[in-house]
Image (cartoon, rainbow, N blue to C red; front, side, top):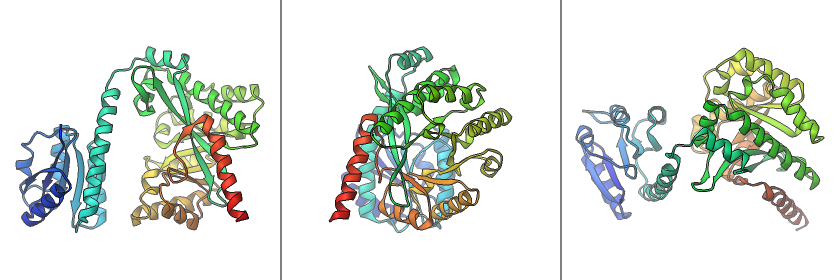
Length: 399
């Protein structure tokens, strides 16, 4: 089905101008100067909604609430002449309602940019739709457990480099499920099932075992990157975890420094006493502890004060936009200062441009991770990638 671009703006001239520009880009539009009239429309998952926040009869916030009530899955673009803080708040509200929020734009709108944005959204939307059809299939715990035992899981590794010199310092292990019938499935679609069913312990053991194997391969090739592994909420309430990890490393004659454990803030919310017990023992055994997605949890400072973290990982939602969002840049700067004051290394994930990379260097951030550096890659590509990088750096020095 061909996607339709819905334009909701009470300014008749503005709405018509946007319609002409969007149709010139090859799209079909429907214009509404009254939001309540638009809400009687039936939209599809492939459609895009351009919504002005400032409307007299029914404002954009009310429309967002109504779209959430209808469980609308169309892509949403917010536009406004208000300051950016209002747009950001509205954007967060849309995401909190689980709407398919894409971006917010300040008026005046750059037409060329809007046309390119819509083309990108439509392309990605069809990809997301295909993926959603796969993800909507119901996986069973038994199917996932069989997948683990039959080696259907794969690890991809995203390099982490030092911002003081550019050397490889680590890699994050990211698990995927290579399903024989449904293709590559990403963790968001099977981790919740693993946690609810108790398969998460089996899954985590598999991930750690294969992360350790990759660490050994790297060391045999003369590389010593630290491998970071995500630990779920159930894992950090398992009293056997510290001894289990130590035993796995001892069996492979590896030191605990080769493994870093990433824990999200949200996973610390429940059973904090048990989590503190386990995380403190892990730290005593020499494991690095990283607080992941920092800034998105509910009690960040409390967690930093109570848990012996060695690393603070700034959430990518702040890092990616820091070159065009002053508030995001201020948050990143504050996180770096806070981490350093607490004697922690600071990792910025979501580095997707040279401009952001340079900003992080100037702010004194320690480690960077993101598409600008490298996309996640299969395990057998990590060592060749780093060697190619090192060879290029040597040639540049000689040149």
